Length: 103
Image 1: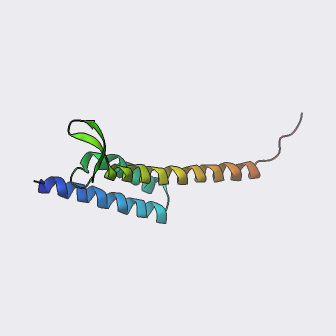
Image 2 (image 1 turned 180 degrees about the vertical axis):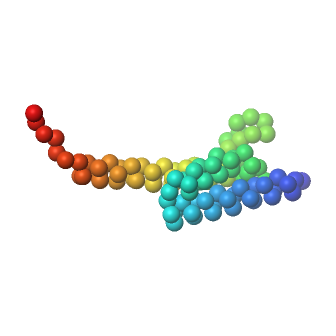
């Protein structure tokens, strides 16, 4: 039988993960990025009631579930966007820097 407190906690963290991901996609900034990363890291620890099927058993009572892929997806989206922003910033700074002078 499911513990209602465990189920409630999983629902809260899942909603927070989706909300922070939507916030990050709408307005990518450091605060929204940290929010996604925080809830993506917390999710595997509380997802037991909503985790889905176990794909790989790590130990008795623990394993990787289909719900754990939400963490991978969320962190992947943040990493790809951060890499694009970093590349764009480097390209912009390379264009605005004066050319080197020979002395």
